[in-house]
Image (cartoon, rainbow, N blue to C red; front, side, top):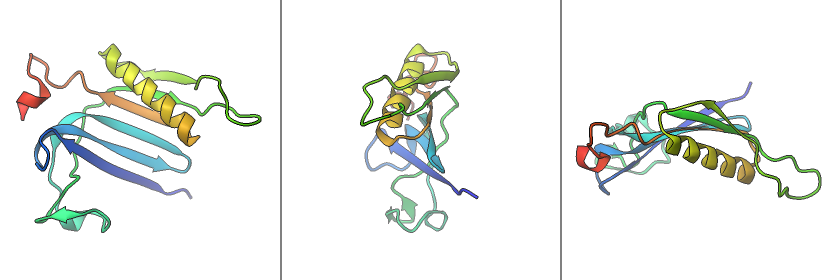
Length: 143
């Protein structure tokens, strides 16, 4: 039976801050495939006892934190087939679930293609940057 590893991450907009708005998401590893899910979201504090031992913490909060972005468009890329040496062929990419933003779809397709080509695994990417901050409010001002 293959194990599944879920790695939450966040990058706050204000360095050193463990709450507010930032880029949040997860990387899910299962066998030789990965799912990357990221977008704008609320950065949530994680208590030290809930975290892995290899993550540095300061004053009972973990530096990386966690968060839940909304689901965006979903792309998948398969590694290019190689018969002899590296392939110069483009990486096959498909859009599985569409979204409201062409930019999010393009970013997801580009990221999944680059990761699949570099790692050699099937890569799924869900990206959601455009839906946050509707009504004219930018993510930087929402914090």
